[in-house]
Image (tube, rainbow, N blue to C red; front, side, top):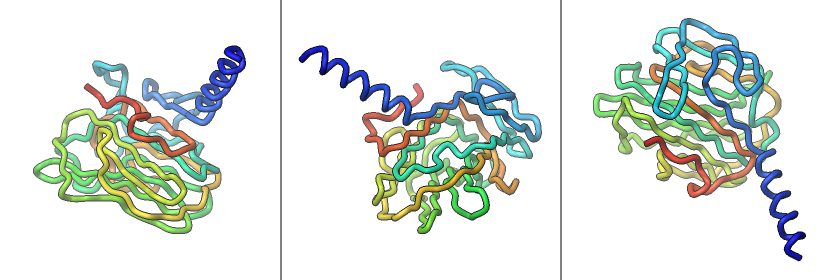
Amino acid sequence: MRVLILFLTTCAVLAGQQNRTTWVFDSLKSISGNAVKVLGDPKLIDTPEGKAVEFDGDGDALFLDVHPLAGASSFSWEVIFRPDGDGAREQRFFHLQENGSQNRLMFETRVLEGGWYLDAFANSGESKALMVPEKLHPADRWYHIAQVYDGSEYRSYVNGELQMEAPLKLKPQGEGRTSVGVRINLVDNFKGAIRLTRFSRRALSPAEFLPPPK
């Protein structure tokens, strides 16, 4: 019986790993085996927790010919990033786009004098932007952010704290591509840095998130 339990536990762990993809931004040539197209002059930088890519808010971007959440009926998308306080007011810094349609998932920031707030956006059948201007966070620091969809509710988080939730019915998206540091149509550049992102093909609880940066 103990052997059977161990076997089932191992299978569950392996299944969970197969349903997750982690991208570490420690190269400008490839990320998780995916070739990268570079625009502008993004830079690799050192952080206390490893390498990251820094974007100048004026043309720096990365493009990958893959949509990491294609086919997912539920998902969790996490990012470890640093938004700078002297960037443009509206920045679309991470964009997953289905080929041949306007279906997409995006992370955006709104930068104000007193800090920044998160905008998580989903469009696939139905659409919703999750943003609460009153929930400002200091800029020039590292954060963990997440958007989570469980099949009926769409939620956004900063450092594990719920920012907003709303009912939503999304269709799984097809194959596509990704832009980092800018919207996929080359507008609304990001100023700051990105260290890591993780895509999970199920809705995670905050207790299952990556730990927030120290």
